[in-house]
Length: 71
Image (cartoon, rainbow, N blue to C red; front, top):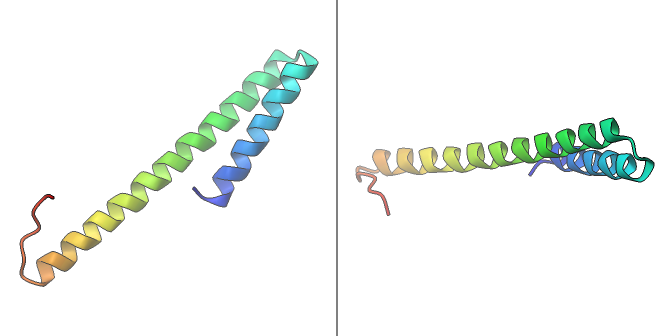
């Protein structure tokens, strides 16, 4: 999770709670959207990072003359 996503999640959560306290449904909904968007971005970042690691590992195995087999 990047700091950007964490900040967006905190801001979205705060907006959502502020909307709930004040009864402002639009603010509450926009906070929920912001928070979930940040969660999705964070998950996508994690998947991208893991996929890069898998590709690099396969490249190293290939260069060393060993076929990469799934484990």
